[in-house]
Image 1 (cartoon, one colour):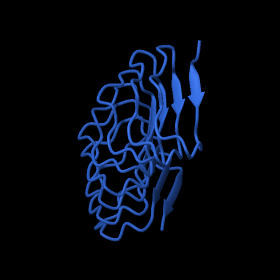
Image 2 (spheres, one colour; image 1 turned 90 degrees about the vertical axis):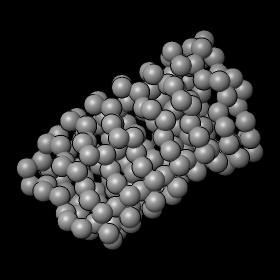
Image 3 (tube, one colour; image 1 turned 180 degrees about the horizontal axis):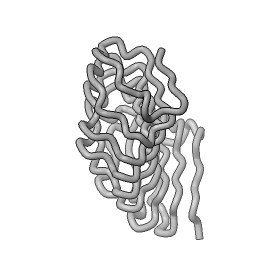
Length: 177
């Protein structure tokens, strides 16, 4: 019974077969020719890494997903995110203009660095957010109130950011460049 498949870096791979219903982890990073995903097991898939692929769209429903990495893809819009999602990595998605208005409340990691078309973050960030990386978001003008759970906030090259957030009460490690 296959629970994990890692085909990252198989640069000649253009498509993947339908995945077994037992699959929990799919790592398909650096498949530069991969433009779409096969049928995925919605009842079991917990981790999906399609970073650095030619993907422009993600599946609509992955209700058990805990980690999603689609950094460096052509994605313009994210689908509704699973309530159990703990980590969302969309770094380098240069066509992504916005994140969902409501991020999952269990989200701990949000990396949207170098999303050069991203204009705003959701009004409310999740209460358990521990890590936020927004470097290189050149169109970002404002930040919402940062949650007290945040321990690492990385923000550099945000040239349109009008006012730095009040970070004194919530951060142990601050990186503002």
